[in-house]
Length: 229
Length: 139
Image (tube, one colour):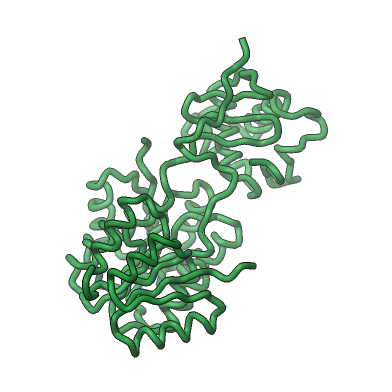
């Protein structure tokens, strides 16, 4: 099973380093951000499996990051880390969409155990997704339409996987490029559009009037799977 | 929407009464048990949507109830309630299968907020890892 990704947003460099080392020691894939704006960008561009979020951050505070993430229907567990331990603060954090609220100073073993409990409940990654006549099998790395395998390039598969895991969300071309193309040098927004066009020809009944991969003018795309399972 | 069913296992009668009243006032269907054996029976007979579980209970303690529930593949969310505040105790509870661990004394608003979270979680569309989502391709 692939390692779970944790994003840690914390402006205290010593604490951030300690958290990163401890979670990497438990074989998590760790990304970090040291201010709220970078943290929010990282959350929206490539949502992690779990978010560790300081509250008092430069530029954008943790409450706002949490609220924005939930407003975009991102449903990863969020654990707030803060020195604000009053019941009002805790309730506010939980009601804004955090899943847990840990007050500083905390023990690293407790935090690791809480993270593990959330990811356990989340369960292993889904084996596949269904939409319309199609089934995307993540284990076999194959796409079937009406039971017949449809050939996809590696890039088309990664793009489709990126879409189905984020059904219903607006996805920017930049975000798609960063997540699917990564550090490849010679890519442009048009690379996304071309790949979308070929994907549509393979999964859509009418590619000119797509049901699944919807264009959002001036922004990017949204994968729609209303009624699908 | 159907009311969420909650089982509270707690041997302190005053605390049990207070918890019951508060959760009922929030629209939960509340069942209670005042020792570990009754709690375990109630849990296994009719699993609730959420279990509030004291740790230090007569007959069967909360750790054991949690361990037994998970060994029987019950995935009911469990919030442990305990005066045991040492990190070792919290870690032990979470590693035995609890989803949250709240130390006494706690504020009722915080506990209600934490309980509410468990009705919000869930997933859609994804096929479970042990399913066989894709048919065999036709020859």
